[in-house]
Image (cartoon, rainbow, N blue to C red; front, side):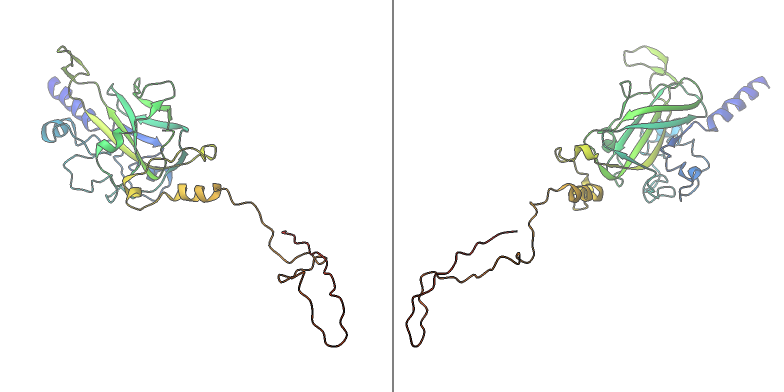
Length: 285
């Protein structure tokens, strides 16, 4: 009977929630903050289908937003999926120090990282691995100490802009026993349970960086889909040519484009000496 109670309690823990991103709110949690997205009532349980499914069925792979890797595409939390409406929940500037808030509802040790993909239609992890955010105090991995709400500061890449970026949260737990890289065994070594979430954001160009070198383009931009934010900023910052007044000449200046100072005027009758014309001044206003 005691064994049954222990097994039951372990089962309850395994199916309970684990963690959610509330700032900027993830696709799974955006509905909690008034955004017009579908409600995912299990928004703290995106664990790649579970430990066994992720590592025994999918070879350790996971969907970019925490969905099972073998889920038919688009996966539930990817663009086009049930919860992947692509609603922008935050607007940042490149190089900005941003605030991220995570709620852990079941502590599993381990750490998490935040990454960015500048193309919302790319569903491969390689896109996110290019831009791993760095914590304000340095490093990229944050190690929570128990359950509760955690707030961190991350620095956005200085030269990354995108009209629609995807911010990824990937939590790698550390409560399983396994083989470490040095051959020893210990808690947190080997395969671990993982959790994920995605938030839709924009990153635009700061005003002070208007004269910097061009920013990298996403795959969609290379195909002709330009960054609207960057284009509008360019139009605002292009230096115009020097001002030129266009309008009527001053009333005290007479203008004649056809003046021949030496040509004699012929008149019938009495000959007279040709009159000397006054020099005409031209003025560009």
